[in-house]
Length: 353
Ligand code: 1CP
Image 1 (tube, rainbow, N blue to C red):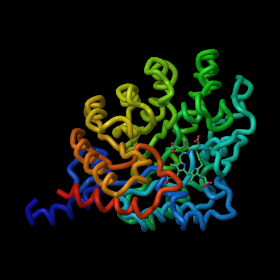
Image 2: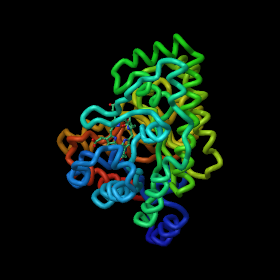
Image 3: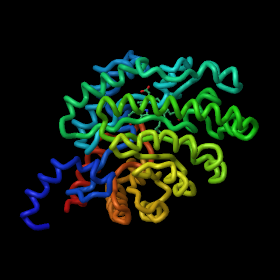
Image 4: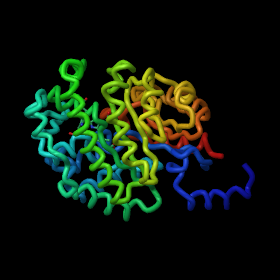
């Protein structure tokens, strides 16, 4: 690129962050990078701050949320921050009795299995998550030019925790309910879609620059079941944000065969796990930007392997209108954070235009 580009780069930066521009498929000075679960257990400064504070409690404290969200931005120089929270936060605020247990994940005291159980999942009063809006407000002042990503769990993934009562490998109770009582299933997913949309709107109104809808476990479904039992509800969430004027990212794990259907849910950016190369993903979701694909476990391999994978992903990402560099799923707690910083530097250096 010629030297006159420097002024151009400044204008580009002013016209919108590199991250938001890549989500929209617009020209960028370099490929933006952030990591799912970048805030959290891989950072010693996070573990220190969280000592003695329960997960849900930390999500309710705007001062802690702000500090934890900022930690990876300061340390790694990522191109976007993601709000520190959890997909279970709006369900807790909607009256579901749950806890997030260290080393396990979300645990629901009384799982949802009947219509009567569904009554305990109330619509979300935005006032019940005002602390999230407060945290976003504090963060916008700290972050300055770095965009903040808001997020929520998608109806299927939330339903899997509510129906199973906690993390699950095979989602047997969830699938039994889905197939055995479609009426209750659709009522549950419609309620969850409503809660999710309310939760995301609180974040959008407070000023997040983009949102990501996590349907982490939806790869457990066939395409036919996804279309019949999930797609309309995820669509309700994403279309409810169509006028918000910010990019919407939609991500799941094991979704190689679901990508075209997931793209129909309406996001601008499709998140991809480590199994599907970005060029293959891009071919399945024409017009959409792509994000993801670096296997979180590869970060434990020698640096030469990490570097080769980063270069491959940057290459393959060119097949899409826009590419946001990310992992194929969240940062694993045992990850060496200095490797993440090196990945950020490498992505920026290799993709410089
Ligand atoms: O004790 C602890 O420190 C709790 C560990 C932890 C953390 C740091 C949990 C419990 N949640 C979080 C934060 C969190 N959760 C973020 C932070 C922002 C960031 O990315 O930096 C995000 C985006 C989430 C979202 C989330 N929670 C998802 C979707 C993303 C994904 O990884 O697939 C899911 C599935 C959850 C449920 C959940 N919460 C916590 C755990 C350990 C789990 C997964 C449990 C399981 O395996 O089913």
